[in-house]
Length: 455
Image 1 (cartoon, rainbow, N blue to C red):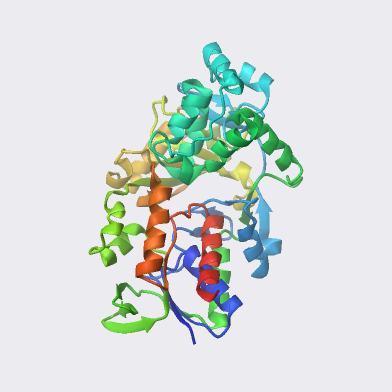
Image 2 (tube, rainbow, N blue to C red):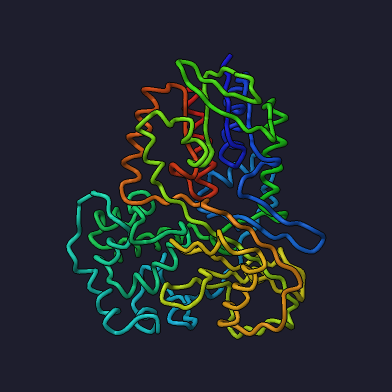
């Protein structure tokens, strides 16, 4: 009988356990989690009035692996899409509507970009020249910043693309790896001869796939944590042995060993899903893991502020905004949650979800929760008028929680995976520090890990 240990009880670990038992009900699985709850960063505040995400807000619907898992757990009727509406960019200390027809900030229509106040006339001309820049077939990894500056110029990058893409990874766009984050952009240039032409084709393809019932993001009526609850219940019913409050150590000497409370347990396979700050100490004598000693991680905070609607005077209709680096505020984005996700908030209330945390800025690590609330409130008052204090607030600090995929990351991870296969047969290391960022990616790599073990 195959015996598998999974270290880390976030969505990656839970998904791995689920798919292992689904593929082979006889495999013996132990799932270890150091904290007192499963789910990792996924956490939902729920009462009779509110359903508020304290961690990730939603997931990208076109990455169907998570939706397929939700359906298999019986949650299909719980799924809800976001409301669509105007989104904005806060640049040069004022809000600008996001140019229509853009995909991740890349123009696919001429008129909206000609009209936008985000760009100077020179920046608009420079962006249009992208159609005439020779395509490249060079696949040497470069930064996102270098790629977009070469194709579209500084104006589009600094005022539109950077606020959108940096928010996803919480990193410096001039250090983030193109190959590890958005390799499809270079693929578009290679295949279509132009980034703009390529994104036009992408837009056509997505048009046929789009839903008439809302936007491209999905949530659950009872919050994302309801999926975690369903996963935990499912894996326990399938026979997975779940262990909370179980801080473990790992060792390999020709046999995989997990040390739990001083007891050594042997396994045929081990799947490690923890952050690199945790697992790197288990391989301190292996020089191939030294990459993780220098691998940076950024800190972010989510601040939810709840108001009576009479307190918030907002002349902008829409679902939220992102912030360009040339603006004098600490927040990096804000979602008007009650507009984007109406099911989360009762009538007559407003929920503002602000994000704080820029690359190389230690404010999240040093500020108290009250200080972060004050920072968010002050910055939001630059965009709208807010009377008084919030009725309630929720602060989630994720210190050094977002690994940065800097230039060269994918190449090194490919080398490391090959090294692991040769030197630690039966070991899999996956999760956010390797290559899984969004929730569907975590589910997908959990599924892939289960298949790798059993096939």
